[in-house]
Figure 1: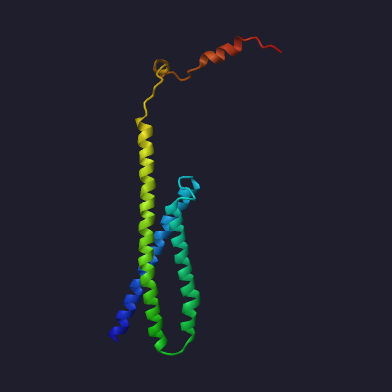
Figure 2 (figure 1 turned 60 degrees about the horizontal axis):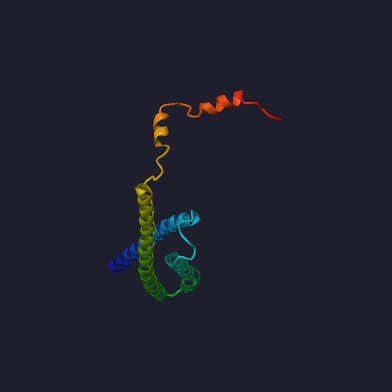
Length: 163
C-alpha cells in the first residue's frame, strides 16, 4: 500500500514539473514571438531556429505519447500494463524534463542577450553628443514662450496672395 502512494506522489511530482516547465517555456516563446513581430529577432537567427526546432520536437513528443503510446496501454485490461505504462511514462517524462530544462535555459539566455543588446543601443543613444549647437541659443530664448513661431502667422496675414 505504501508503495502505491509513493508511486502516486512521484507521478504527481513529475506531472507538476512538466506542467510548470511547459508554462514557463510558453511564456518565453510568447516573448520571443513579440520580439520577432517587432523585428528584434531575425527569422534566420541560429539560436531562434534552434529554440523553435526544440519546441516543435517537444510538441511532437507529447502528441506521440498522448495519441499513440497511451491509448494502446489504456485499452489493455491486465494489471501488468499499469506498471509498464508507469515505467514508460517515467522514462518519457524524465527525458522530456531534461530537454525542457535545456530549452528553458536557451530561451532565457537568448532573451537576456536581446536585453543586453537593447541596453547597449540605449547607452549609445544616451552617450551621443550633439555636434550642431547653432540653435541652442535660440531654444534657450524661446523656452518660456507658448508659441514660438508667431512671426509666421503675422507674415501670412500681410502677404499678398497672387492668383
